[in-house]
Length: 465
Image 1 (cartoon, rainbow, N blue to C red):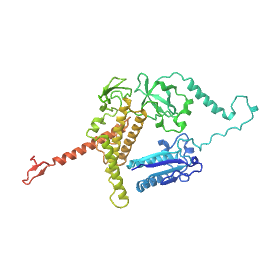
Image 2 (image 1 turned 90 degrees about the vertical axis):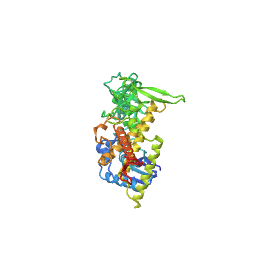
Image 3 (image 1 turned 180 degrees about the horizontal axis):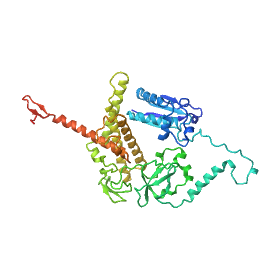
Image 4 (image 1 turned 60 degrees about the horizontal axis):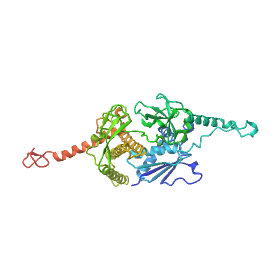
């Protein structure tokens, strides 16, 4: 069945046109007050957790979100649209929060933000001085009200044309396809013509990504605030849209010794022309390991071979996941109409686990393909994002349900998972435990002792024990 589409939009950007077509259109302009002015978040959008927290704290927001959640789960709509003045804060935040809730309940969700990336139309710019005749100022000079804008633009041009030498201790300006971002060098991943770094918020220097590998040719020099107009914040974009060309934003394949991401591969080629990664070698510490031994940042989490030994092929796993989702949806619909019992929470949890495992396995295969040159960095980054989101959804669900169905040795609140790739390692732990439980149940079904007519204990095949 198609996913439920959630759309945010801004009424001011419609210019009198009707709102997007949807089963339910929610206008929050009068329901929720605008938090931007009170909290100085004009430069942020509802895609950031900080804005989502502020919107959720707005009087009436939580009740509205509960109502939308109940509507989406009980009425099975194909689309919901939420609109505010310009959609940068209230509408986009509510859509993101609603999407998180519905995914946790096993629904397939597609999110679209029509206008969140556009400038904040409610932020009033300082009033410019009225333009005067050419006699009021020297020829060739900007008008007084335009001088700060011209000065900022001039500083940006100077920074771009004349970058200063940089060192590993500097915050750096890194060129990306959409502009320039602030970055900081990490200890892992530095080698030859590439450097390991994380992207930072241009104003607070807060790390916004996991360490990534970036070509040194994309480093413009030390960070300068003159670059700020070129950042994702200034352009109203999401950080997920900003990664150096050819770099991985959240690599799962890391060195088991130093956790570095600057790696070389040994390729296994087949007579048919196909190829696989035979082994990885860290360029930093020279450690080598097999592809299935990945990853290493969480020692307690099983590697891919241990976690998915006995798992069905990816195509079969995807088919089983779709069957399970359809079954849960049918039973939930029957329960809502009074034609059946409610769906047990263990079934919802099984759906979340199998979805997270499928995305984890798919993302890992894509990352191996990147090293072989068969998959683009954008595809890997997208797959990694989906895998991480699904893993966080499972972790959140287990925490909110008091770990009722957790089978692995480390619970969801363990600091074991608070690392790069930690949430995906949690998925592997729980999937391995699920397979072990299934195998144990199968063994018991075949080996359960029973007594024959003579009272002697026999196994499932009727043989004396």
